[in-house]
Image (cartoon, rainbow, N blue to C red):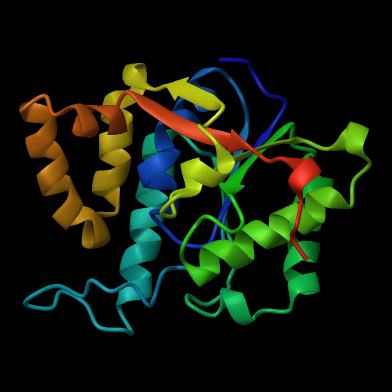
Length: 227
């Protein structure tokens, strides 16, 4: 893995990083790359309150904040930014203000690589709004000065429209860090971890893929349609 000058990760919710990016983040940290994770919200509208409930709407953001801090610790991130937006309202934020927030991060950090969602292919409205803000901010830069942009996509049919992911990161060396990052977000991931752990134990190929590689698409500026 190439050592980057600076990696900037931008997602709207705690645990967005855990599933598809945490192995890559840990690998960059282990490689000596400075990593900043800007998490826009505390996931206070997360669906899982437990049965019986372990949290209320008032206590959930505090729980998820601690989980996010624990996840960052597991990945080795020393620069965690909690940006103060509210869960499920990012899509209603002013587009220019969101883009300006990203621009300020880029101007401060001068990242050589940004990881976020791929606009149009990330399902959740907050995911989409975050991805569009990143694209708008990077688009403002001269082409020669733009950081690399590696995006997650997981909507139905995304591979048919985008093609196969063009970046695959081998994360087998940080398998346990990835699993522990997911475990850090236990209030929201318990249901998945149970199935994932069972699949790994049974050598299920799909389960093993989660802990052996992470895949990204480079953003295709020639097909840029973000408004």
